[in-house]
Every structure is written in structure tokens, then in C-alpha cells.
Amino acid sequence: MPDYRLSLRRLLALAVVVAALVASPTAQADRSVPFKAGETLTYDVSWTTFLTAGSVTLSVRERRPAGAGRAAYYLVGEGRPTSTLQRLYSVYYKAESMLDTRTLQPSMATLYSDENGRKRHKTTTFRGNGTVDYEVRTATSAKSSLKVPVTAQDPLGAIYVLRALPLKPGLKPFNIPITDSGKAYTMRVIVGARESVKSGIGTLPALKLTLEVTDAAGKPANARGLALWLSDDARRLPLKLVAGLAVGSFQLTLAKAAG
Figure 1 (cartoon, rainbow, N blue to C red):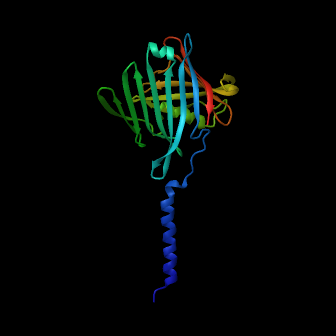
Figure 2 (figure 1 turned 90 degrees about the horizontal axis):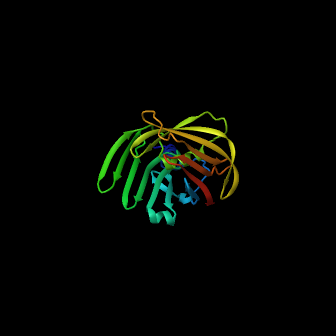
Figure 3 (figure 1 turned 30 degrees about the horizontal axis):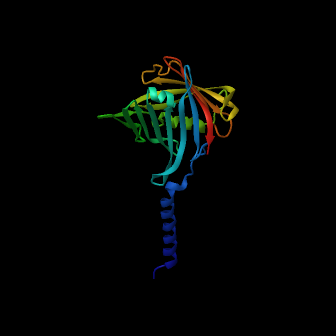
């Protein structure tokens, strides 16, 4: 005669195993980050002699499903010149990135640009195995693949990753692999001392990050300098970014923060 109690125990054990397997994709919690869906940061852009040359917004549009029990932050960055400059030279830029909420690794990044009617759309797809697929579309389309470190970031996502790191003065410099426009770069991050930074939301203590970007051959890709100031508080807001150009410099200063 069968032992129904034993069969029942086995059935319950099997049910527990099945439940664990079903739940496993969602069991891991999101990584703790200083930003959330709905955050929108607006920046004033200055360039050389133009006190205000345009505006840039960085936003976490939403936390959306990304398949197999995973989720991603949908990040968007948009840039436009002032109306005066727009009449002289019409430009618009939009960057997007999908950043995994657990690993903070990107799955896809896009960059759309419209420069006086010359439109270009670039898409980078991260395969998760050290390979990225790159496509650029204008009037025609070109595709390529590139081997990169599995921890490679896109430029927009890298800003949010920096915000999530436990940065402090005196921290040993570290590298973040970056891929952009079908090419591989290395961004060396040097954490400087605390400074007071004035922006549209007041004067706040901030950490200055010097960002040294080199290409695959080790040659400087931003020889004229790139620096980012993050607020030294729980939100780690990007308060200011300065980039040296061939002529003058380019600066973003936080004007307002919402969300």
C-alpha cells in the first residue's frame, strides 16, 4: 500500500522548489541608488562668450520591465540651444539608456542628433558577454560589432553609475570602460577634494571628479579636460560639468531639480 504521507511530503517539497525557481528572477532587490523614476534635472549651458547657450535635461523617465523578471531605468538626456542660437544653427540631441536596476549595466543606448537638418541615429546594443552591436543610420545604415569589457557603460549611463558609487576624497583613482559611437574608451576617475559649488538650487558641498578619457590605443580623447561635480550628500546630484573644447569651454550648471 502506498505511503500517502511520503508522497504528500515529496509533492510539497517539489512545490517549494518550483516556487523558488519561478520566484528567483525577481528575488534579488534593486541596487540602492540616489536617484529614482521621475527625477528631472535641468541645466543651463554656457559656451565661451555665450553666458547661456542652451539647456540640457537629464531625467529618469521610468522604471520599466526588461524581461525575465528584470527591470531597467529608462534614462533620457536632451539638449537644445537658446532660441537665438537655434535661429542661427538649429540643433537637437537626445540620448537614451536602459540601465539594469540590479547591476547598473546597460542593455541599450541610443543617440539621436539633428544638426541643421542632418539627422543621425546611433544605437548601441550590449549583449552582456563583452560584445556590443553598433548601428548608425543616416540616409543609409552601417553596422559593426565591438569587443568591450563586460562592465562597459554608455556615456549617459556612466553619469548615473558614478552617482551610485561610494565616492569620497582620497579614494584611489579607478577606471570605467566606456563605449560610444562604435568605439571603446577608458574613463579614469580621479576623486578630488570637497568644494563648494553654486548652482540654481543653492551652494552645496561637492566632490570634484576629474575624468580622463583615453581611446583603445591609450591616447587622450579629451585632452582639454573634463570635470564633474557631484553634490556630497545623499542625492549625489551632478551640479556642474565642464569640458574643454578646441575653442573655449563648455559648461553645464544645474538650474533646477525635480522629482
